Length: 185
Image (cartoon, rainbow, N blue to C red):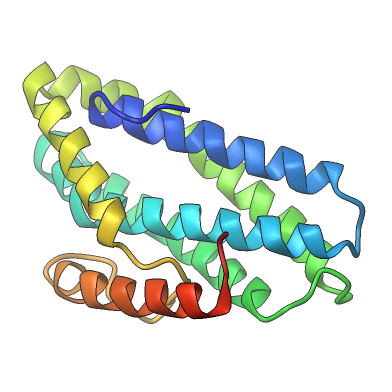
């Protein structure tokens, strides 16, 4: 899928890619090592997406939407639950007894989060922000994803300024680890 456009188009494209990963995982036989490779790839995408949202989308939500603080806090709490699941999956192999149960739990959490964003948050944001502000935010999100971490770090800060200061360095370390191990290829 092509990326680009305003923040809503960018994040919705990410959501469809996540849906595709879950479909591929479900089509792969339980215990098959390909499931682990797909979960690793899904993890990379989810972490990059989440970190970018926490760095830029949720501060915009706080600024532009009525009740924005509560909305952003709820979205960040969703991310925290997902990140904990990703961390649990990180060192598991596809044939570990908890692997499939954790993947199902992950899909449930992620799907609910996506549905909430697309049904509630995105329409509110579209109404509250100018087209140019949404375009600019889309470009900022794309840039953030390029330097964001690729592995779950549940104890890392999830709000500015801490996340904006630490995420690029953590992302550099994660990408170096991924290169050395071949993860995400």
